[in-house]
Length: 190
Image (cartoon, rainbow, N blue to C red; front, side, top):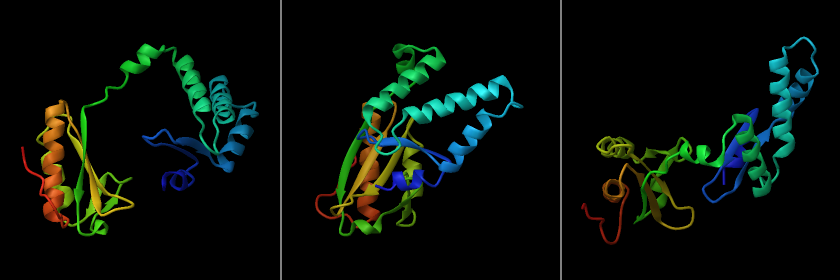
């Protein structure tokens, strides 16, 4: 719920959520500068082409709502500019196995986060404990965040194998339970 407002703080702000929402936002000052620069005859051909390309991107995207059709067309534009096909694009990213868990807590506000909800700033010591667990796993990554509607903490973990992602998520869930006032059935280490 905060991504759109955060993106507006930048000259060019890009955000996409896992649920498909998102867009790119260009400030008026950046847009005006690009227009002015593209008309400047003293810049190189390469710089002029870059300005024109960015202006085309801005014309293509829907800055208001970020609809899927304009996003798809933007992807097509980028793939054409890179001379990539869909198979090459697909190979550029490998989705790691992951696990998401929920931990019931007495008060979700005990968990505070920073860095776009990727780092726990409270309770003190939780993030360093998560970091220690993550360090044991190849391609490990984990973060926690409080639910916006109920007294639970969501745990996300990923690693190179599904088994490792499951173990890491469980370790972090145990940490949250111990350090953030877990209630109900305690997560068990496997």
